[in-house]
Image (cartoon, rainbow over all chains, first blue to last red):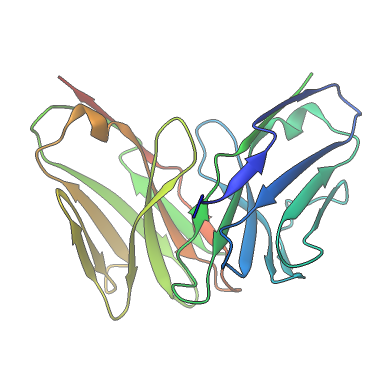
Length: 114
Length: 111
């Protein structure tokens, strides 16, 4: 088991551009979560999926953000018309049917918007 | 609104010292409290505490949940420089499975 993986690890983009991140969860995990973390803060919840269904979205998830998990496996998080305030570490986590609350995190994608 | 507060925000100790990190929470319907360690990368899972399991121990690390006081502590004995990290506390949000994290305690262990 290779754990949760994320791609890319780093992304630099200009304000106004769209970006898309990918997360591959631990293979047998049915829940997948996206968080955002800025310097000096703990991770902040954005959204989560159970299988392919998006069950919860935080109010932090503005309409410029969209997430998908089309086949209940990998997930993508897209940010449209990026703003400098979107600069952060985007973390993906997954959890399984056993130990449903134990979330295991990927290495994150660091986004810098210039 | 669910809230998690950690203290202290930062701590510097000498190798070999014992440290206690604190986490207090306000949550409408408590399910679980989790501790994570974060070095210069993603958080790694340490412990999960629930109503039925209020104390956990792994090597030099241990954690206790006090449901009456709505708090938890993380103890690290005989600290090593490799323990230097940010320690995050989180509670499961009332709405489901997502986690609400505190700001973390930044621990620096000096040789």
